[in-house]
Length: 232
Figure (tube, rainbow, N blue to C red):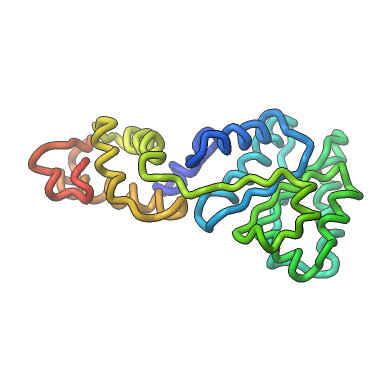
């Protein structure tokens, strides 16, 4: 199993957000499921799509459903796209009659090419809950925004990443303190898509420095000047 596969978020608790209010909203949709459709918006790489995926998977697990086909991208639009959504929803609802969940990334593409259709769909199909994301909230018409729970997801600060980074490094056998990880994350300049790659580079660098035979990663005055970030 690759580093990315080992440490991909498995639950909404593994996600990192700049605002604890956003984390609480994501948690509610995952475990208590408000009825209003959800729209996450913000800059690329803030974890919007991952959050929606985990919300849906958590809900499916709670309902005892094994659903794999529940995600669409706005770029896949065509005139029959809403029929496709209904077909996907029927597969979910057939065993138990529970409301369906459909994730749509880049929903603004629907608004560009099929203006007003998403709003009509939301109004007519209350048994299908849309969980959507967009990088461009201004492309979403107010009439649709008013029918969704719109939540801005901002880029986490380096400090926000520290607890998650510490958990991953510990799982990889690192002996590092909270302060060590704080120092390491000071050098991180990427977004949510870059986070795992950055940590993998730090682990590989530290293991190479300490020797392939080492069973743990250690911080020392000698290694800190060589390991990237100086904290492993």
